[in-house]
Image (tube, one colour):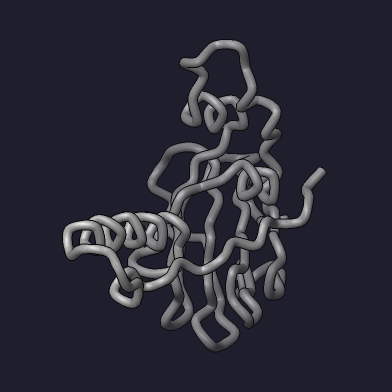
Length: 167
């Protein structure tokens, strides 16, 4: 049910606006910085807001956000979906994801300019679910030594552990 993303304009540099005093320019610079950081245009991607459109892209029913109770929050939605956002990074080489317990995982991964292997390791529980969202431009190979499943740029790979192999 996704619709086309809204195209947002860029914000002008407050220093380039004539006819306003320095206090107002300082105020506008602060607002511009907050907006650019939250929109993910600069700074750490950990400070970027998560929109309903983002949730819809990864398969979370955004209609749940419209519950009658104002206290119905994002944590409850993730708990209901049985998913825990757990991993987001740009790879610098092949990597191993070590199971340390907890819920199922969604991993947002940029292969970092080359095809990379992303291998689960450890004692995962049977039926454990892992989703890999490839946010980069190269291929990520999940479980490269056994099932060797490729996730192309912009694709989402959904994997379950049988107790002995990933499928």
